[in-house]
Every structure is written in C-alpha cells, then in structure tokens.
Image (cartoon, rainbow, N blue to C red; front, side, top):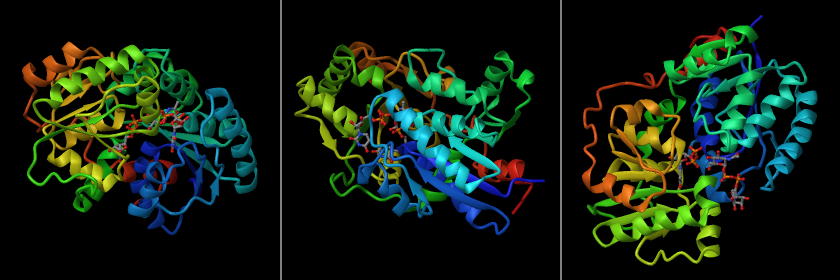
Length: 359
Ligand code: UD1
Ligand code: UDP
C-alpha cells in the first residue's frame, strides 16, 4: 500500500524554500494528506513567516517554537515535541529536508517509532566531521528509508557507506531547489531596502558556524569585502547569527551595504541581477549556477563538487587574498548548458516514489 499521509518537518530557512514546491504539488493531489510541522528553529519574521506568506506554503499544523539553543538542547527539545505529534498524527511517512538540527530530530523521532523516513537532499558529504550539518546528514541518511539525491555523486557517497546493506531506496530526483527556482522565478522583485536600478553589485551571504564563530575567519572575509567595496557595491543580507557576531567582534562594515535578511522573491531578484555571488550558503551555490552567476565559496570544502570541478564556483575558504584573487582573476566557466542537478521535476519524482501517485 502506498503512502497516504505525510508529516513534513521543517524549521530553518532553506527548508521552507525546499518544502514550498513539494507542498504545493501535494496540495493538488486529493489522495495525499500532508501535515506540516515547524520546529521553530528559525523564528524571526524575515527568517520564517515571509517564506510561508510569499510562497503560499500551507500553515504548519504545529509549531514547536524551539527558538535557538545549543545543539543538544535544541535537538532534544525537538525530539520530545515531535514524538508527541507523531503519536497523534500517525503518518505513513515523515519527510525531512537537508541537514539542519530539525532534519536530524525529525528523522530520529520518526525512525524510533517505526515510521518511514524520506530524506530529500540525501548523500551529500563535505567529509568535515566538525561541521554540525555533516553529522546531521550522515545520521539522517543512515536511518532513512527513502534517500532522494540531487545527482549521481551523493549516490556514490551512500554506496561507499554501505547503503546496500540497510536496504533504503535510493533515487536520483534532482534538486528540489531547481523546482523552486522554476516555479517562483517569475515573482522576482527588487528589495525595497536597496535602490539598485542598473547598478552593478556583488551579492554576499555569510552565516556558517565555521566562519561566524571564528573571529579570524570572519574578520578575513570582511577584510576582503571592505577592499572590494572600494571598487564595487557589496550587498549583504545579514543572517541574525552574523549580525550578532559582527557586533561582538567589532568588525568595520561601513562601506558594505548590510540589509536585513530578504524573502525568496527578493533573493531571486538579487541573484538574477548581481555580478557575482560570494557565499558560504549551500543553497546559494546552486542558485548562482541556475541563474548563470559565478560563485565564490567562503568554505574549505563543498558538497556541490560538480560546480567547483567545472569552474562555475571557486572554493577559497576565509582567506582575504584568495577571495580577492577569485573575484578579480579567476576565469569562471560561462557555459551554463550543463545540467548537473536535474530538470526541476524533483517534486513529481519524489511523490511518485513515495505514494505511487502521478499527476
Ligand atoms: C542553521 C543550520 C544550517 C543552515 C542555516 C540556514 C543547523 C545546525 N544549522 O544554521 O545548516 O545553513 O540554519 O540559515 O541546524 N537566529 C535568530 N533568529 C532566527 C534564527 C536564528 O536570531 O530566526 C539566531 C539565534 O541567535 C540563533 C542563531 O541565529 O541562536 C543560530 O541559529 P541556528 O538555527 O542555531 O543556526 P543557523 O546558523 O541559522
Ligand atoms: N535566502 C533568502 N534570503 C536571504 C538569504 C538566503 O531567501 O536573505 C535563501 C537562498 O536564496 C536559498 C536559501 O535561502 O534559497 C539558503 O538558505 P541559507 O543560506 O540560510 O542556508 P543553507 O542553504 O546554507 O543551508
């Protein structure tokens, strides 16, 4: 018997964006019921509500209002709340996205209750076990029944880890963020905070713990941005975590245009119109590629290896000189005819695999 009732667990910004197209797809199918649970990991209006409103994601039936905390505390409180919800809702399957603490808590709560787990964005690896996301990914993959991969590389990672012995179903669905881009690109709109009519600018985001929690790394990144700001406009929607650290480390951002985090429709506009994307975000690396923009990655390794191997992205870490060198000297690939992460039909592949239902 196919799956008829799905509980989807989201909590952090990228998960709202990934859930949006799939929830829309499911809402159009009479046979399938989806219950959305928000863990409350992200809670500011511009980190959460804006995405539900803009992309018309059905309102979560539950919000655990976890609202920050250490890894153990956050994940533990989520587990407790999720277990209660799963006992009540009795789903056939729990769907989780990506690699946040909400992903791991969702998968673990479900698996301990013998509920099937589906993981979207499975098999990605940075091979850096200091990254909280790497721990979340590996553990989530290991207890998932359905592993939806963006390309062949994550499948190979799972095979190296022995997926054949735990009998999960591995499916290459392509990237669900491409579904989102295709669905919402038409809604792109300029952010109100910035007047950029015809202006050239670099789009920057920084939020990853390895950069924000290390003053040497964060200062080196902002050192490079300050240097660049003398030559071109730098637009940086600031993640709340980074905002706090900029203050704590007393970093000079005077010449950089810092703006509040933006909604997805603003972000799509910023991506479409920028010269280059400079980021440590996972999602933005792919979105830069989808919009034909070069990407400088502020990390020491990446899960999106296809983009680095083919010179669409330059991996520079948090080294000022390397960031500047990539910006002004690196010859990025400009032939975007490759299609590494599928055709933007991940939603239909995932739903068909889980439920047998085809639109
Ligand atoms: C989390 C994910 C990361 C993902 C990112 C997406 C984990 C371990 N990390 O990182 O993989 O890339 O989300 O953005 O799950 N804060 C606010 N308001 C909010 C949200 C966060 O002020 O709405 C502040 C709080 O001080 C919070 C801090 O940001 O403690 C960090 O938030 P948290 O969810 O722990 O980690 P992220 O860095 O957002
Ligand atoms: N994003 C957004 N507004 C912002 C910053 C990011 O809409 O101010 C979107 C971005 O386009 C991408 C997703 O959020 O779709 C990526 O989330 P984030 O960088 O927070 O997390 P990661 O992908 O690194 O896990």
